[in-house]
Length: 256
Length: 324
Ligand SMILES: Cc1cc2nc3c(=O)[nH]c(=O)nc-3n(C[C@H](O)[C@H](O)[C@H](O)COP(=O)(O)OP(=O)(O)OC[C@H]3O[C@@H](n4cnc5c(N)ncnc54)[C@H](O)[C@@H]3O)c2cc1C
Ligand SMILES: Cc1cc2nc3c(=O)[nH]c(=O)nc-3n(C[C@H](O)[C@H](O)[C@H](O)COP(=O)(O)OP(=O)(O)OC[C@H]3O[C@@H](n4cnc5c(N)ncnc54)[C@H](O)[C@@H]3O)c2cc1C
Image (cartoon, rainbow over all chains, first blue to last red; front, side):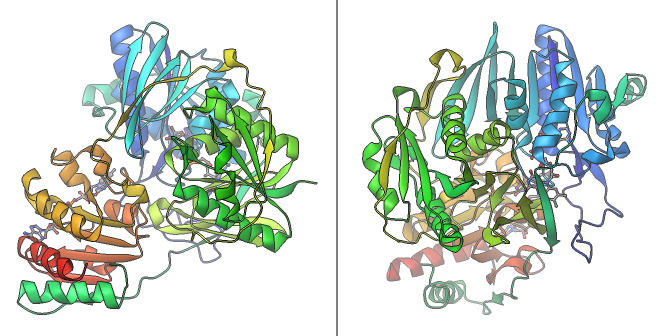
C-alpha cells in the first residue's frame, strides 16, 4: 500500500509564546520545535497499517528548512521516505494553500490512504486535512479514535457530542487522527541512525506546479487578555471556606 | 457583488442545536452593521418546520433542502449542498459553529469554495466592510485577527461564547434543490452509539467540575459527580487522570483534549499545567481547589481554596444544596 502521513513542525507545547511588538507574528527565538502531537498519532497509524498490510509510508511536510527534523523523526519511527515542501511563499500560508501544496506532492505518490492530525497545535485551525481531501476529491473521516481496515475500505469511530459514530469510507480517503487512536512509538537509536540515510525529496512550489494565492491572512496578533488576580478564600475550616465560595459564586459571579 | 451573511444551521434528530442560535445571533449583528440579510442553510429530513425557530434569532431566509440523504450528517452530502447554495447565491460571509459537525463541514467547504476561514473564533467584527475574526492561537497563548480577501469570508464560532439574542424576523422558507448525486456519496454512517449517561458534552456545558491526579483514583470521582449533580455541571478531567485510566478519553480537557468555554470551571486536584490551561482558560469563572498554594492553576483562578479537596468538595456540595 502507498501510505501517506502529513506532519507539521510546531513549537513545543511548553514553549513560551511572545508576540512581536508590531503584532506581525511571534518571536521565534529560543523556541524548541517538535512534531505536532496529533501527527504522532497519524504517523503511528500509518506504520501500523504498513506492518499489517505491507507497503511504504511517505511523510510530507510544508515548512522552512528546520521542518526537515520532523520528517527525520517520522523516518526514525519507521517511515520509508519524505517529501519536504520548502518555499518562502508557503511560510504561514493559509490552509487552502498549504493543502494545495500537499495535494500536489501527494498525487505523485498515488496514495491508498492519507493520515493527518486533527489539528496543528500552533495555529489550531483544524482545516488542512479536509481541504486536502476536497482538493484530491477523496472522502474524509475526521477526528478518529479507532480504525478497522477491510478490503478496499475502512470502518472508523468518530466521537461527536454525546455519541460515537461508526463511519465507513472507501479507500483511498483522508483520515485525521485524535488522541486515543493509538500509542505513538518512540524513535529508537538504530531508527535514528537509519533515518539519516532515508531519502527526502525537497521541492518548492514551482517544482510541484502550484501557484500560491493567499486567501486569508493574520492581520494582527495580540497577547491574550490579562485575567484579573483571583481571590484566595482564607481560613482553616473547610466547611466555612466552601460556604464562602458558594456565596461568591451565587452573589458575585452569579453563575450558580 | 457577494451579498448576505450566511449561516449553516445545525440540527440533530430533528431539533436545532443551541450553537445554531448562537451563530444566527452573531450573524444578525454583522448583517445589521452591513445592512444586509441573514440567510440560513438547513439540511435534514423532515426539518422544514424548524425554520420559524431560526427566525426568532434574526434569520431572514431559511434555505431548506429536505432529503433522506441528509437524515444523518455526512461530509459528502452536506458539503456538496452547502457549497452549491452559497455559490449560487454568492454569499459574502459564511458562518458555522465550531462544533464537531461544524468543524468537519466548514473545513471541507474551505476547499470546495476555495476560500479562507478563521477557525474557532471568539470575536467577530466588521472593518472596512470585511469580516474581521478574532481567534485564539498557540493554545490561547496569543490571539490572531484573521482577514479573508475572497468570498465567502468564512469563520467557525466556538460554541458557548457568542450570546443568543432574540431578534424576530419572518424566517421565510426557500426550498432549494441540493442536486445530490447519490452515487457520489462515499462515506456512510453505519451506527450511532449514544452516550447512555445523557450528560451534556463538555464542549457545550455551562458548568464543568474537573478532577486531576489529586483525585487519587477513579472511585473518588463520585464526590465530583455529586457536586456536578447539584449545580448542574458536567464532569471533566485532566490528562493525568485520563492516562491513568480513571476517566474516558472523551472527558479530557486541554491541548490534546477538549477546548471548553463554560461559565464556571471548577478544577479539583489539577495543578494547572500549560497544556491543561490551553483547554479551559477561556472559561468565564475559574475555581481552583488544590492543597498546594504554589500550584499554577491559582494564577488563572478567580476563586481559590487551598486545602484538601476531599474535605472541601463535599462541603461545597452541602452548601450548594442549601441554595439550589
Ligand atoms: C498567527 C497566524 C494565524 C493564522 N490563522 C489562520 C486562520 O485563521 N486561517 C487560515 O486559513 N490560516 C491561518 N494561518 C495560516 C496557518 O499558519 C496555516 O498554515 C494553515 O491554515 C494551516 O493551519 P494549521 O497550521 O493550524 O493546520 P491544521 O489545519 O490545524 O492542521 C491539521 C493537520 O494538517 C496537517 N498539516 C497542517 N499543516 C501542515 C504542514 N505545513 N505540513 C504538513 N502537514 C500539515 C497535519 O497533519 C496537521 O495535523 C495563520 C497563521 C499564523 C502565523
Ligand atoms: C503534548 C502534551 C499534551 C498534553 N495535553 C494535555 C491535555 O490536553 N490536558 C491535560 O490536562 N494535560 C495535558 N498534558 C499533560 C500536562 O502537562 C500535565 O501533565 C497534566 O495536566 C497534569 O495533570 P494534573 O494536574 O491532574 O496532575 P498533577 O500535575 O500531578 O497535579 C495534581 C495536583 O493535585 C493536587 N493535589 C493532590 N492531592 C490533593 C488533595 N488531596 N487535595 C487537593 N489537591 C490535591 C496537587 O497539589 C497537584 O497540584 C499534555 C502534555 C503534553 C506533553
